[in-house]
Amino acid sequence: MKTFQLTAEPRTDLGKKAAQALRKENKIPVVLNGGDVITLPYDKELKPGEKVVEIGNGKGLITTDLAVTQDAVRKLVYTPDIYAIELTVNGETRMAVLKDIQFHPVKDQILHIDLLEVNDKKPVAIEVPVKLEGHAEGVKAGGKL
Image (cartoon, rainbow, N blue to C red):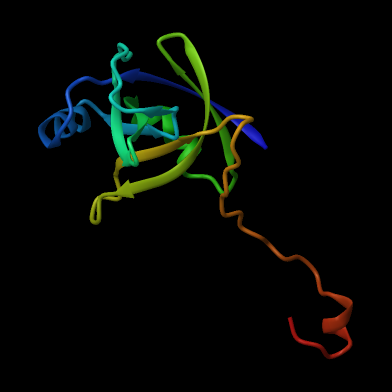
């Protein structure tokens, strides 16, 4: 799998107005999901941009709110290839994959990106496009694909 280098900055202002202000600066709000699962109540100090989302059964998930520039993600989004993203935040590197992208319905501008953090400890299921080339021997003999 190809890798893509992406640098992001943590964002502390959350909500609709903060996201609109980011977009005016030609930046995109990004959420990095798939962090550590923790037991609630969580009393340790979180890094800038991190928050705890409750997932039930007294458990929580650490997510990170980030911002990236439109130019930084252009080659990641507008390509048929699948990339493993080396995400650098405050000098710390994390591995992630692209989970979801939201586009403006008229302008086709990127509004929001969701990333999924990956590591060796848990599997990640992703959709991979398959491109068929040539003809199978069974099809040549009259079968159907």
